[in-house]
Length: 187
View 1 (cartoon, rainbow, N blue to C red):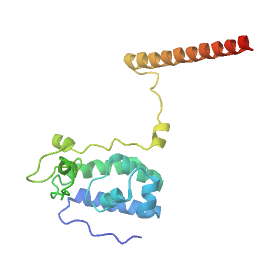
View 2: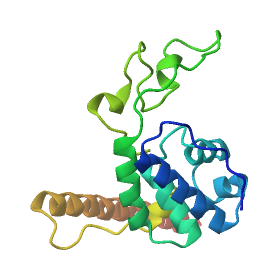
View 3: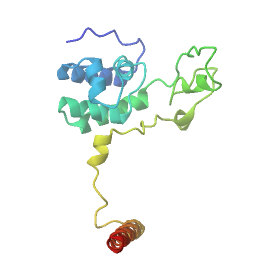
């Protein structure tokens, strides 16, 4: 097992419990942070922040860790929801290099309030954290199309996209036929 840094003092119990469970799950995989970063869509430094409770992980990161560990993600996602609700909303102001572009200080705490005197940023303004919109490409392959009981607008959109695909296929066949006829007449 890894020798973890102690969690920050004053963390709500929900956050502390969630991070401890996440650490146990990571340890169970037997992977280093580098290897974990290679097997998920999240970097070594991101995992370091998540596992040391300096930043809440996006839901997809928790799902990715559960997938790597071979564990049911649903149980951890419930714990994630409880922890994110209780996660401290204020973050100590982050030092931004003098060469950083304007507005970089607001992005330094991506998704969290900048600090007691700093501006609020993004989704934290609405009272919660937003999931990281990045999804690994292998998760996109597993997505299934809309079920047959989908609403009428969804069926119409599906039919329109398939009709467009049919038109494109017919156009390609016509161009191919024209090329073959042109080649035969020139020969």
